[in-house]
Image (cartoon, rainbow over the protein chains, first blue to last red):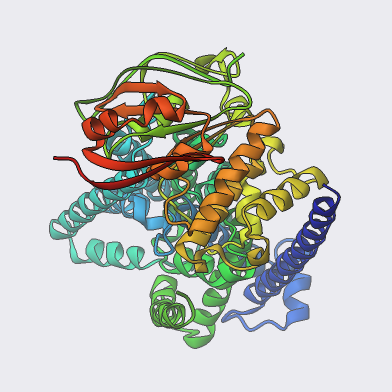
Length: 358
Length: 257
């Protein structure tokens, strides 16, 4: 046994080194995110100097610079940070649960349903009636999506339903695809019968995804839901790690598959639903952030979630700053930019994976 | 006290009766081989015994009814190696084996010295220590199987249940695996493993349980279960039988006419 105790000590040392390296990675990502958050505060058409802009944040009321910083740039930066983090964490959690690196937060139908909710609000004129009607309708859409997906995919949670051979993950994907398709069809229907061209244009623009002209009201509405989503997903780390071994082995460890899926679906829906509700559909962040950071965390799903959250926040803040720098006067939609950069980047990632891995 | 006690276990899969009333016990210090042709119900028995699929009949682990055990208690009493050799992510072999320690740790708590020692011992037993830092997905089939077996061993449960643990292993590692089972039994633990290699079953198991069509056809020491009549009837094969100082030697020879 003596020799094995020595082995144990070696592996403990290896693990300590690995967790130190992980700490370094998280620290670096946090610093990068903070930097980009600062950049998001400092970049804008008003053209204040950095010192002036930051001082305006703390100065008294009434001045134009203070108004711009507090009412326009700060909410935009906060939303960029939180939405990016939500997309990153959700993507990492979904990929971990499905054991599929191509999964993304929109997969379970939440983005499409939240969009549908928003479109219905615009279409009916509700959005014009009061400010929060649109995000609230979008959140409602996301909630309906969760219930529909769980109702369709459910069945093995209760009692001794048993572990399907990959059936749990598969039914979730199928239900998500069905809900996405239905929500997409209904959105098209709303466009088809839109009351006037302006409403149609508003719908299309909203669906492109943007952080422009969002207020603190949007932050107050979405932040609690995104935080709740993070808290739910944060509790999944251990289960996602165990799922590396497959559903059956995970269930034979101390993982409840039904609880895991409920937390996952609710967490993703709450967070991504709220994100979509205030910013529209923003693609690729939830797909690329986990993919990019996976090799740096030893591919462990639990470690990936926090890293991917920070990475997602950094990516979205960077994209939002870039959108403002590229076209300061025409509002380049954030979702368009993330897709434009994200899609080729993802192709490159796939090519690299094919070369590098088995 | 039995590590595992199943009484009149029945299970239905997709409308087909996969288990039709099977009773089986595993005591400390025993290596029990679960044998039978494809579709006999071996995997279903292992899954049902742990409550991974629904079943009727009484099941108890370590003397307590399965229904009264929390998932964590169950994982502390029995480790399970499924037949599907799934490794979802390119985690290192050491991290993969470390997953077996989950039931011993509070959520979010880091691995402690005892956990690392258990991981090191399990990796040494399955001869995967030299792969410890490599991504588990890059290993060959047999190496993956050994790494996953090490994961189950690292769990340190009194009862080990393994579904075809010898499949895909080379002869040396098959024998080393069975010797590890014997060593576990020597420490007072119990093993229930489904096997297709009748030679290994004959030589290394204390007891064999022969399943066919969801029924327990025979149970007892290898000599009593591996008879020409039963092999012909259940497997449809003839075999060469011999004895040496290591025990029974069984080698399937041809299809029975």
